[in-house]
Image 1 (cartoon, rainbow, N blue to C red):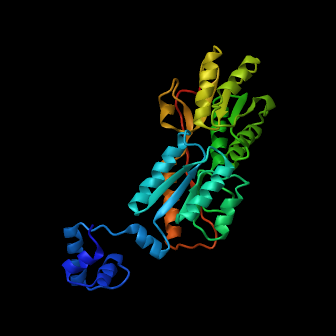
Image 2: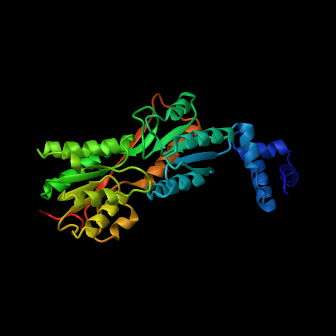
Image 3: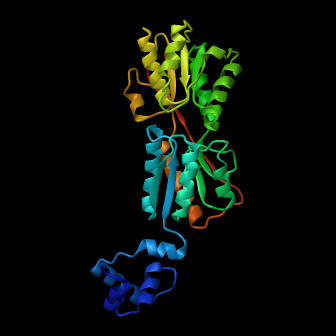
Length: 332
């Protein structure tokens, strides 16, 4: 195994000079630096990054904690995080919590004990006190696709505005009896999407039917059963706004299984713009959120914090969404 002493011997300098030349933090004359780098290339020397990190109090490793690895939005976010991390010499440790808060706290404890430099969470709930505690201790933390108000740095979309505009589009195309399939409203993002739906109806003078508010939570329920049960009761909306694409896809299947047609009988709008959404029958009209870019922005923010960037208050970056109009909505 090639060591720093071998590089020093070949370059004709001391090991400490090699360290200074490689760190780039201490001035070394150009001729000496060139000799060192030539020796590094010739010997194919690989610095011991772990040892260097431990000496400096960091390991260039960040943790990414997600709630459900089966949910297609999180692999897209994770790819964005990993691409930026790799570009900056960081490694990513991925942890899946299965929406289990105790498991999440356990991951946080273990990752801290293994010298992780910072954490990106896609799991924040109001009871996530451990995230606030990390922030209070000045441990680098960024939220992605979730947020906790203005308490912690986050990269998100405007869930309220995006949902409001999606439901307003349904109203503008002649729909009046609009159902919503919403996720766990303990999560701020689903509360915001519900409020966008409710206010869009109210601003148009349309009623919010309690029986058409379908609360669906849990990673195994995609909305199919809730919509099927609604239709079997004879409650037929003329449109459904689903707070996620998987729930919209489940709704399409339920409508078809009940002998109805999308969009002739019921129009459907989703939220995510997953790749599959353009291939289902009919192609899904949906709110597109830039999941990959959200991951890249979260990683850039976290790495800046790890590298010493400090702001007076947390930075909340709001990414733009677009309503992608396909064939699951019909003009009434």
